[in-house]
Every structure is written in C-alpha cells, then in structure tokens.
Length: 189
Image 1 (tube, one colour):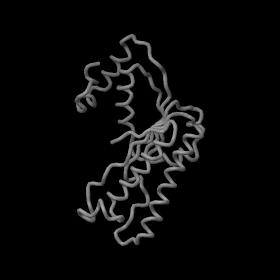
Image 2 (image 1 turned 135 degrees about the horizontal axis):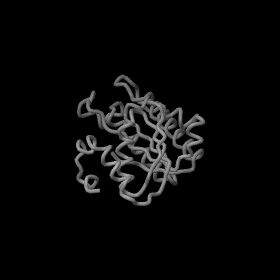
Image 3 (image 1 turned 30 degrees about the vertical axis):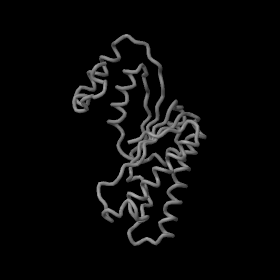
Image 4 (image 1 turned 90 degrees about the vertical axis):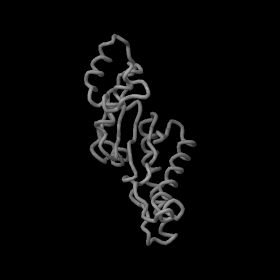
C-alpha cells in the first residue's frame, strides 16, 4: 500500500489507520499468522496499531498480546497464564530511559555509580534471559533514548554520574547482549 511506503505521513496514518487496515484485510492476499507479545514500560496501544498496519502490508496478520502499563518486567519474570497460553511467536520489549531504575545521582561516588550500573545490567539480563528461555522465540528490544536534559551540561556524556554517559553504557550492554544471544535483536531508535 502506497501510504505505508517510506517516507510516510505519520499524521495521516494515525488519522486513517482504521480505513487502511480495512483495505489491507480486504485485498484478498493470503497472510502468515503470528502471535506477537508487546511488553511495555510505557503505553503501547498506538505502537501496536501502527505495527499491525505495517505487518499486514508485508503479508503478516498478527494477533497481539499487550501487557498492562509498565509491567514488562513482571511479565518476563513471572508470566501469567494469559501470556503463557498466548504462546508468542515474537516478543517486543518497548521500553524507555524511564524504565532504568538506577540512574546515578550527581552526588554518587564512583563505587556507587559502578554498583548501580551492575545492578541495572543484572536486572535487564534477567528479563532477557527469562523471555528467551521460557518462550524460545525472537525477542526485540529498543535501545534507550537519551534524556532531553543534561544535568551536568557538556559533562553529562563523559562524567560517569551523567545520565547520558550511563545510558550510553546501558545501550552498549544491550548491543553486546544482542551480539552474543541468538534470537535477541535491538530495535535501534
């Protein structure tokens, strides 16, 4: 469908998503059916609606499981019966920098920053490992966006206590995990 080719008009897609979906479903093409679980650290409803359009356009008719708001970690570590019975073919972790719990404070010592980083890496690795081991399907997670503000000014990206520095390290850790783990992919924002 022409409207779904790059560069696309996001505002128009948002406005006409129902009619575009209807047209795609009525085009007579056969489609592959897939179950996709979207586990989010934020609201994921609109992401699912847009993903549905682009997948339909590529010949994939998806059924979606959407976790409750900001419950991605609980769903990964302690999945409920609904997610287990859904049996996803793919899992998308939609997160943001707000889902990093242990960002350093400007008053933290080097040891405190290191401990926070280690704790955060262990936390995310536990989520990723749990999903991969339990569901044995591809897992896709976006990397973390940079904050809009720089508490330490230009030093925010070089000082270990800076949020940008910490998030850059987390993104490197995420990329390293993806390079080593089969079936784990980074959606690079």
